[in-house]
Amino acid sequence: MNVTDEVLRILDEVLSLNGRAARFDRNTPLLGAIPELDSMAVVTLITSLEEQLGLLVDDDEIDGATFATVGSLVDFVSAKLV
Amino acid sequence: MKQGPQALFLASPSGGQRFALFHPAAGVATARGAVLYIHPFAEEMNKSRRMAALQARALAQAGFDVLQLDLLGCGDSSGDFGDASWTAWVQDVLLGVQWLRQQTSAPLWLWGLRAGCLLAVDAARQLAEPVHFLFWQPSTNGKLVLQQFLRLKAASELLGGQAKGVVQALRDQLAQGESVEVAGYRLAAGLAHGLEQATLTPIAPAAGAQLVWLEVSTRADVAFSPVSLQSQAAWQQSGYALHSQIVTGPAFWQTTEIEEAPALLEATTVAMTPAFISA
Image (cartoon, rainbow over all chains, first blue to last red; front, side, top):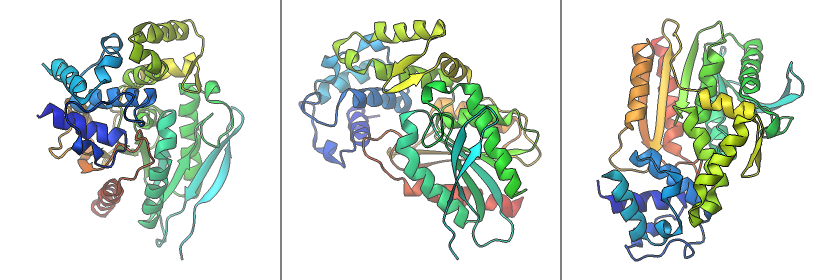
């Protein structure tokens, strides 16, 4: 599984980005840069990552920095999948 | 002749009215089945209203009587969300079944989406008649549904890294029998406890009982999660004829915009139709 591809696919789906996520790279800023990513969307995103990738996120493991960029989110997910 | 859905109010024995939409079977003398739709939890219900209506219409066109029911405190039914308990919702499902039974004696299908599947199973335990199930993206564990719902409250704190305390505080309040306020919904302790205990455990099937289990995914390499596979196996082992499938589509119950999954609509109608030709 390519974690970056999976994360981008889930981002695109949850935020209804209509394929915009395909042009994202590791340096693409997320939180504060993508208007669709509000606090509710962050929760949906976590839930989708849990359900679709089979990981379990403890609420004290995440903060704003986790969702700062595509790269930070991918690194977080990769670490959870190990 | 196309016949549109009929809006109606069912009087609940425990008081108040439940809003329902009845889509009568079209083009058949006798309905192929009587289908009751049980919506998902909280905001997921609103997001999925359109898909539920589209599927209800499609099934009516395929010869099924379909009833869409708004549970106590949801949609256009009376009461506040905060008045609802799990037991009251189970009673609402039974009320819907009872109403359908006044229209038709066709085989009964309980169709749930997400947490609606948990409710379908709990209600079916109390029914004396054979039940077939249609599960859309079923939640297999109410505990997880509750955890994800409580997390909504923690949404803003989550980004500041303070979420742990928030969710724990909500759990403590519920444990003391108090209701909590989450994302604009007041959640009563009785609803939280019932939901938390609900699991998708198979009930003893009648001969020829069918289970249609459908999920959607935007992934190319589609496979059921281990949790789904485990539950499907349990239902199959207990005697249900299982049809399970993943089709391409968005997670319409939680997407930011209201979205449709046409492949799911088609797969549902196809999966339910031959069940009766072979039965």
